[in-house]
Image (cartoon, rainbow, N blue to C red):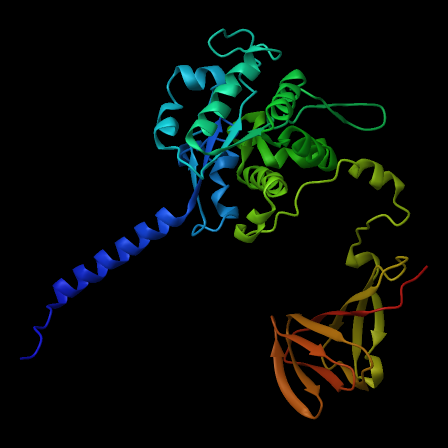
Length: 386
């Protein structure tokens, strides 16, 4: 007797249930990281755009099959008020063995004018933080203490702008508690301060809520690009505590700046450069026996110790680069225009977006075609200058 057939509707329902159960199983297999903290980490709706907390961007660095982010951070809360207003209650209910609890407070604990939030740094602040550590340990979770995000506060000096330390004893209290209780520490105050110093006053504004069109000049809270960067700093610090985490991180965490970035900059024998093509343009005939007129832009030709040559070349109407042999790798990228590319006896039409890699032993040429200039970017290894 043949097996009964399933109707399309029943089959769709069965497939949906299978997909949902597979998703639920995947979600159960993922580890969970909980975030508790203040407005620098909390989530915001679109009505507050472009404001974001770094907790909103944390998931973008983590493999969702391996980690789920539970962001419980709340704007305006201190280590004290977060507990007293019962924002910790859902974390206490859901936290379980194997979870990670990221703990970042300090901004609002510093507000001496508000006794509902203020915690003096020597005793009260670490005592409240210890409540979170104790909760995590009681649940079999891993607590990680995070020093507060640096404020973007620069003081103009005679030589350069100085970043002010606005957290002082509060960041120190987190470090001391972590050392005393042997709790993992992400020193976000130090990491974000190094990052801000390397950027400088003016260049750091777009990362914070410096939004003139909204009449905002906020040096505490972040825009999206700032939230992404700070989340990167947090994950970088977390990886140092748990190196195995790197296998479950899906974005580059080589971010921020070293502590000695300013000293390195001052000591640079070969400083970084900026050039504009209008300042270096050279009118030249077609190279390697090519026809017509071209304009060459030899970027950084005099930069000492540079191991690559980078050129822009414009082939004007009727111009070309003649056939010539190659003894090194070279890349041609078509910025605009059209051309006819010859390599090892084959002819190809090329246009904007095409890239050509020429290897040693090949012979090649390129000719402008059509009505407009053919604009090329060219890169190849060069003998470094002293």
